[in-house]
Image (cartoon, rainbow, N blue to C red; front, side):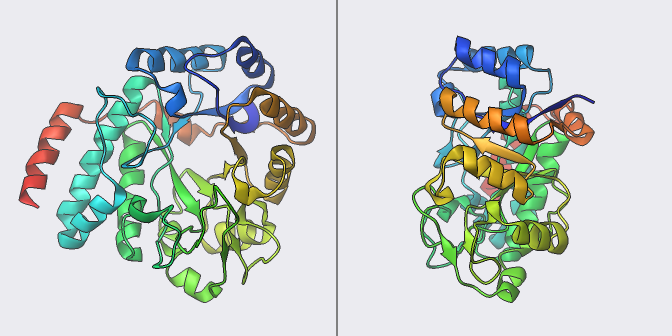
Length: 336
């Protein structure tokens, strides 16, 4: 089994620069994440993903944030627009079974769209439980304020994407919903008691602990570890995520370029891996930072394999043609 440097990195544009090609050939990162800056048109995306796999390996994890609504990196006229999590949560609340069926069909269409482009991983479902005072960074990205609806929605998305060839990445473990500020801009601090967090915020993650991948929240939970954000917290990673939630998959950080991290990306990468994260995420595509981070990681940490379960996921075909799934979706939506 081949192993790779435990970093998932962004790239700067719609094609690889010579420096980026050298980076991938030398460091062999575990995966890549794409953003809107990398997605100019369908053919260019296909060419880019094919090139990435050619210089790395055929099952290179290629991630994207394609949640639907305002968090959609594929903003092209000829690519389907997907609904928000909140849209489906309201349908589930109205008619549980019908809402979940619509979410399943939506997930099939999403898997089909991504696989056609050579993208094999998506950073959904969003299993955060937004509180009344939250910053708005989660907002309509969440399925509901009801932990049972969020849990059920997450289970459908994880099962459907996995069975249709795309690896889901649940986020933001163990829960971002009580953050009163945006972790892209500053460090959120949550003062809620652990017993309440376990009953509500943690529940959707606990009930979806079979997921292959999860992304951390850059949040400080004062009543559990007042010294560290989740990404740097051995206490939260071991006690909450691994022991309480029983999550056994690969744990990746959120973007280490975010302000909540509050230290240099190289230091953040080392602190994350020492705390118990399996993979670090660096999104901004700045090649100098990428080289510095990769060099330090290579010096201090062992490479990591792509689990067979994830490779098996990537090799699965989509179960239903996107047009058929779309027709069924529109019919059932008209009945909702």
